[in-house]
Amino acid sequence: MSRPRTAAAVLLAALLSTLTPACTGGSGADAGTGGRPAVTVAGSDHLGGAPVHIAAEHGLWSAEGIDATVTTRPSGRDALNAVLGGQAQLGVVGDLPAVTAALGGRDLRIVADLSRYSDWRLLTRTDRAITGFAALKGRRVGVPQGTNVEYALARMLASARLTAADVTVVNLAPNQVGPALTRGDIDAGVTFPSFYAAARTALGERYAELAFTGYTARTLLVAGPKTGDRTTTAVLRAVLRAQQEIAADPARARQAVVAQSRGALEAGYVDAQQPRYSYGATLSPDLLTQLEEEAAWAKSAQGLTGAADRAALLRYLDPAPLAAADPAAVTVR
Image (cartoon, rainbow, N blue to C red):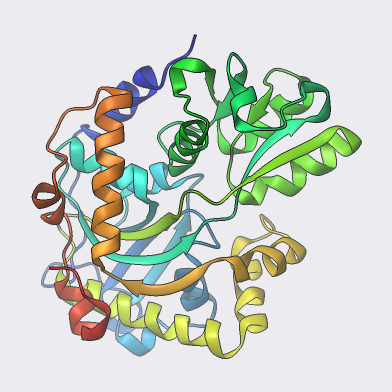
């Protein structure tokens, strides 16, 4: 039986790798176009991190005096590793990778909670007769371990008083869950929402799903240890402007996300899913409470070490850049 503990050990090994110097927002920062400081942002989920991608598509960086480059990684875990490894100054990551890094003692700062999402699906097949989460007991379930999707699965299991020990967990990349389900290699799977439609198309009449709203995934903006507050604040100001564009013209904002995905996302998917995200860069007590709950789960389910109490996790929140951009957005203390 595959257990999350193995994947957690591999993830921690990657997170504990030697860091290379990152660019900063103060003296010594790489020069961008027109002498503006250059900053690289490692993105992942286009919808969770939509404000970052909209800022890139609509050229909002230059107005804040920076030259930003946004790259896209397969998952928030990969975006986090880019920040920790010095390939990016900031990263768009899920809540669980950030918690895992904190438990591993990594040097990073959570500077904003960009968005919230609660519309999860357990993907399965009609011939597996999984009509409730209790029916997962003894089944093979695919999930990209080390991402917030793994925690979504844990919450699904917990809703039926099950744990990962009650199923065979199969570690798959996000884009592998649907194909594995189609082949019959797994009985069910949880993956990023961007892969729901492909699984539905591939399975046709055999496709089945269970809705789950018992976990609110948070898309976070994290900064590396060498990233200056001035640069981080400038990025957040551009993000806040992008949030305003989402509210003022949702259709145009969705078009920007599609364009920035460079063919990875279809317009129909973005039109259907982006309204299900709640946007607004914040640092709130609710975020800290959720990080504490996830840290406790990670220590228990995955055998991770590190302090998981509220005070220890609070040290990973850096409110100064967001407070400089929008004081009202910071309510955590």
